[in-house]
Length: 219
Image (cartoon, rainbow, N blue to C red; front, side, top):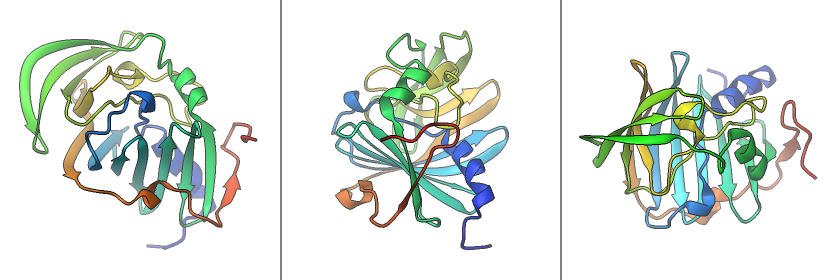
């Protein structure tokens, strides 16, 4: 496998990042610090991701077909940064723009608790039927031990709003498994509570800034 990320593979990798979680940072609580390992499945293709949290800083690493990239999110600068280490490049997107396109802050999904409970990755969660403003539903097993989680549209979504559960859950809700129809679209496989170095959430020096595909670059 090549150690270099080919330029033509960048759009495919960013498309995978578009389904990756983005936190509602203002609501994130500092009680959990560590790394959550996740399997994201989209159109039958599974991608592994690592979701790291330290205070209000978030980093999302994703691997797709040997290609690596990660997103950095903090409320202080109001931006989401997509970093591609193999290319030594990065792209920026306004968090406010992402949230607005996803409909976060408008009308979130309706959550109907079922009373059915399960333990996933060592954490107890309760199943709920989550129905988005578009009428589409999913089954989500939700814990209240890992802070607040939302999933608006990503930078490659072309401005489309997220469907169903992806529009943003409520405060202190973190899905451990999401099933859409008969397919598991999102599943946490491991949770590690540990102290993380703040440097993990910083943009590396010497990287070249790229324009987000289809979007004007930030000033």
